[in-house]
Image (cartoon, rainbow, N blue to C red; front, side, top):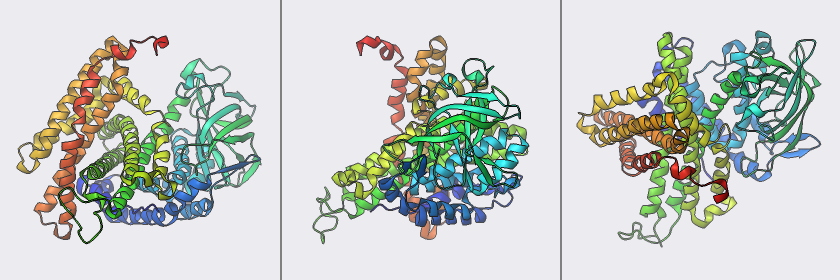
Length: 597
């Protein structure tokens, strides 16, 4: 049977010792978000994830969702779990108090998202999509739309979706065919078909609020002609109850590789009544509010899967007896040694540990800058934080999902043949993780976003938001003897990243294919340097704690330093060959004509 325990010690280390989460309570509106309050919230979130959501993960995978006569039913136990989740206020955690939310920082919500995704990624899709709909309406909806929909989304009584993809178009949304025809009362009649709609239909809530991309009759061609509409499953009454059924229905659900407890739907809109969100033909701007939130959320899915896969691999490696240690019996009283004594098993476990802990620090760092961008009183600080989040979003999404899938695969490898069997649970993590590399923009699209948009934005301003703090950290710590093992490898990899940035930008200006061919390797390089920076900060924090006398936590901090050294010895060198691949150019990639494949 699979296991999961929320990694509270590791979470607290990142928040308190590395990032200084106490700074959040100095931001206007976050005064109550003290470290003690945050810790209480995290403990409560850990309890519901461990005790209620995690026990449904494997059974939900086996049962899946069912579709009959237009009705979608979630797996057994999901309705009760969702009720407990909403009654606990978890859908309200980071929402605006003006609409019934708790008003907690995004950083705290990131922690909750990680734990949910470790415990039950399928379940997490339902509140996760609602959060995206909430954000789009909160930023772009009229006051009337906000008053109608936000309180119900905050309580979780109603849920939300993102309706973008159509059978003939996914990434290229300019090709959508869904139409929006004005009605005399100011509403619009929405007609079209959307596919791959997560949580598009289910039995957890009394209403489902669809955020739908469509085109007005006078829409320009391409993405400049897209508008965004809110389309409820049931028409809301003035008293907040649900009224008549709207012209939207689920046509079918997909039979998928993973996340089987999440309903992935084909949604048919047949003259459904909707209301414009934001300005006409400006729907992509509003939708990207949802997309960017969702991309960071998908990055948290990668982290969550990596954490739970690593935990199960570690648990199995300590229990499974096979052969003897290469240096002689480690536990001679037993018929064989546990496989954790074997170097190759340790290589996989250490990779899982080093990457997971590094990604956690990077993701929470991004979360804290979301909060600074939202609440800091200095406009310049808000802009700087917003720039950094924009830069980190494709990196967090792509790298953390790549590695979530890779670490899940490593967990299966640690288990050997038993990992391939459903009952042990780890093969589910491979299947569940695979979608995270695809939706909300494939990881190749994230790489193109990084080199095509973020690299050149505002004459490199986004890049400077990352390069400057890394360079400053290196300068401030390079003379510290305790930091030599960390600062110099970081400085070397950072220099390679800067060199690659200049070369990709230069070549890309002359030939866009050069940037496209280098994009994935460049993103991976960037992610590795970002993790190296976070591991240097973690090493510094651990060193300082040990120097101050860590007491019974000395072993914990010592493990941080040993894991950091593994990262620098065995993972960071990947930057060298990624650099070579990125610099290899586009010629060999583009040489073959289509007929030559």
